[in-house]
Length: 326
Image (cartoon, rainbow, N blue to C red; front, side):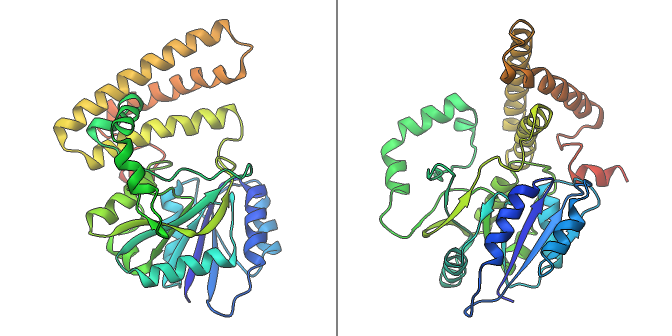
């Protein structure tokens, strides 16, 4: 088996349906692939419907909503391919993209993680000039200043005439990796429940001497956010997990002295911001966007109390946290 396509789903059935239709239309004599869908226990009656509708694909039901990293690792443990393509359910795949990813990975064994161009429903290409978080560019203002100060250097790095360019990390929506590289870096880090697991994965490849690359010879449709932010409550949860995952990344990737500074700055900054926005939302209750802030403040307060109580920054939803409670 050349490629195992692994898709993690949680109640994103409409997007998943479009994705699987695109894959079902692929007919190739040059490569072999399988499709594995890991459903993170959507528990809404759709799992059996999709399993019957797409009987040629493998459907696995997870024990719970155990996060993206766990779902990816679970799917990989069942995979037979020499290469893995981790794909978001809100994407659409083509034979051309699949062939380019495989051929490029084989031709460039130094590439540990490969992705391709991504385009949304408005025909706008996603920017993929991603840099690893660092002390001088961890927060938004300092990151903007860094990019402006190094504009010429960054443009030269990413606006290359070659078919490949090399960001520090690529989004988890499209991650192509060989089985050898996946085993070498021990897969996805299950300290993360959602977000920043893709940055961490690429960092592990980089630290192991591999390259992270994007090929411009293939493009995949990606409806960003189409499978995660379904309502205000879900939006608050996912936005909270962005903050939590930043804390997890700090713990995993920075030395202790820098960790203390970044954790403190992030905690104080986000609590002040969400408190102020929550107060504003009381008076401007008719603005729907503001409703997410009180929910986030509540979520973050519970999380930070848990950090003090359990002495860990790992999200209580993450599998590596849950394993310590068994």
